[in-house]
Image 1 (cartoon, rainbow, N blue to C red):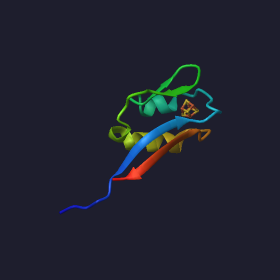
Image 2 (cartoon, helix red, strand yellow):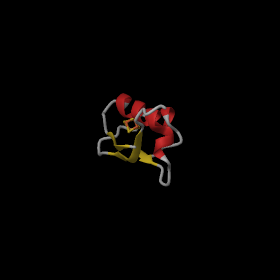
Image 3 (cartoon, helix red, strand yellow):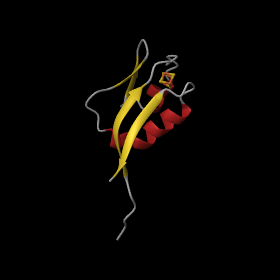
Length: 72
Ligand code: SF4
């Protein structure tokens, strides 16, 4: 039986400072929409896009994408 722990992303936020580069929307268009700044789409099951959210947070040039995760 596999017991690998899975993380569940419960919240994604954009902190002030987005430079509207569009990278997060390019990486995860299901989650982010970049207009004046980046916005997180509401009503999304973030866990389905966990790896893309993590990648966007890592690659955001100004590091303003934050997310909360909890062990399942
Ligand atoms: S990757 Fe970062 S700076 Fe670029 S649009 Fe997304 S939140 Fe803004």
